Image (cartoon, rainbow, N blue to C red; front, side, top):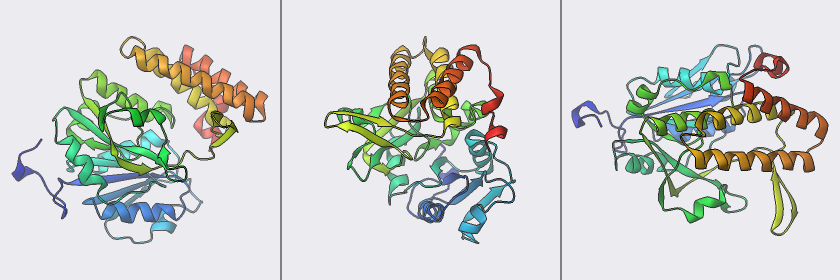
Length: 303
């Protein structure tokens, strides 16, 4: 940690934290996220990937005090947006990374800082994603973990990233475009000797999009219903990460293989048009194994 006289502090007493919010065709929830972040951070940076000619974050935010808006009129992907926001936030002691629809509870930053300050080798402190409708953790394994648990990966939304770790680890992986960006970054941090912790006492309301449950009672399956083009990236990037981390994190890799199989089975059973969606998954697995990229699913073809 920097010495006290080199650390800027928020009015709340926490070291200086900048929020980086990524946006794409945002709705009014972006303004709520920005206002909530501004109450806890010294600066809020919104990086808008909305294409030129479309209504973007400027229409939602107006001239909101304390918010810097970066928009160049192109969708360069989640990782590129994060990289631009992190670069803009130079000087902050930590970075709070958020999605445009993130709910930012009061005290989130100070409570996550309490975890970071337990060990200077903790790169990331994260809250526990929470399903407000069902009143349960999105990951059912969370309940069985310690209150503050070391994990291999956490999601980007809500993570508090130590600046010195960000400087050491370098950029988020832009060739992934969207899916797996957070997992790759966390796994690189673990390989570099950093710790990642999740405090399950700190809840972050989080949505998984158009998720639907199918079945009865305990025999229920969760289907994501993501757009077909996105299934390709989920499969491709997931397989790339399994290949790259099988030796370093075998338990994580085997769990990921099982989850990938579960997810593909849910698509086959509950997500029409099944043929097109399973074809996208097969193409993603193929390119994940070979290191290729199918032009039909390239970002410029889908945005």
